Image 1: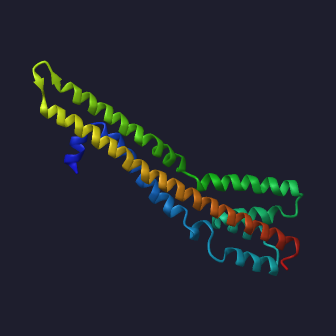
Image 2: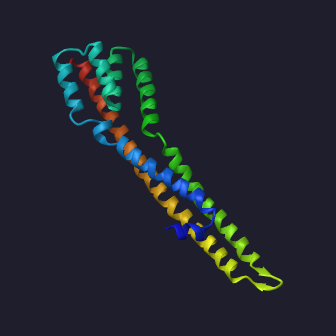
Image 3: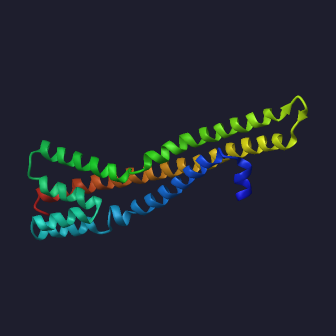
Length: 201
């Protein structure tokens, strides 16, 4: 591996850094976006039972709000369902924006890396081509420098693609997962509004 890095030259280091950032974000988001954390199983069923038994007090709502992101949304709905439609919708939108911001944390970096990594690879290619053409001198061709120029160009071109592809795939996968989780929250919030309006029946 170290030999590959040496052959790729100094332009490979920014790509190594971006690959490490990509790997760290993928691990962090894979953990943070688990359904068991964002939308715990049976949470909605438990809320329905509590609404049927008696209205949730402030302490119960505070606990629900801190339990998960979906709990935060559901607590907001329960707190504001008796208000006007405008106030309720405004509260839901603000809470939804806050939840989306937390779910989408670091995704912009994945999108940026997916775009920038091939450009960093192209930059390394240019550096390699410069070294390659510099091998041609009036005294003849420096074979060692020529080979090094080719190595720098090819390794960096490949490196840029290797870094960009996982970042792009991860961004798309996480984006789809977030959209699905938000959709589930919205449907569940509508269910809670209906239950609150009918007294849990």
